[in-house]
Length: 188
Figure 1: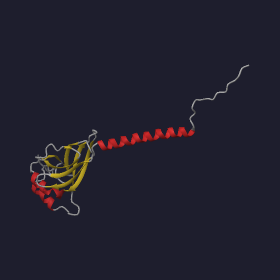
Figure 2: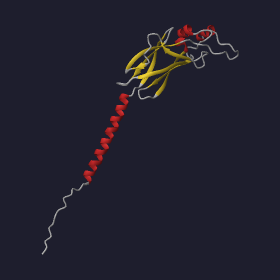
Figure 3: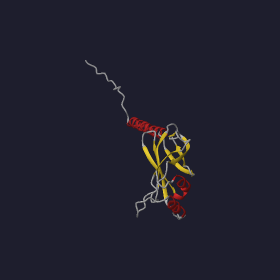
Figure 4: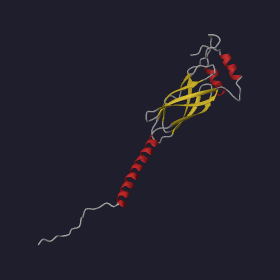
């Protein structure tokens, strides 16, 4: 006579609650990884900005800020765009004593940017450029409520390799002394 022995199935069974716990653990850990990745990228990539703080006969002074805790950015180029004012756009470079400040470490740095020279645009009715006296006279007659705007553009290369050009506008009368000093009748 054969006896049947009853045995219990000892393989563990996963209950719905255990499955839910596993799924939640995977989702939470994935979210944590994404969150850590976001903060790592944000905290290690430079984030550069600037504001115009002053001008004099030699330069426009800007305060450049890099909000990253560790990585530096680079100032690639800067220029003045005179828009409708009769001056040619001008490339700027760091003034004497500010060379080497094109690498922007985390924090703030004040840099003087100066044009090599400024040149006048051609008059629309003749093939001659505006004279220095004509341009200085135009500066004196600017409407104080609506003066012509000049844009300072600075291009930065962030630590992740992305290049960004950032603008700041100012009144052309703000840089009157700089124009008076750097403008020549023959341009550059």
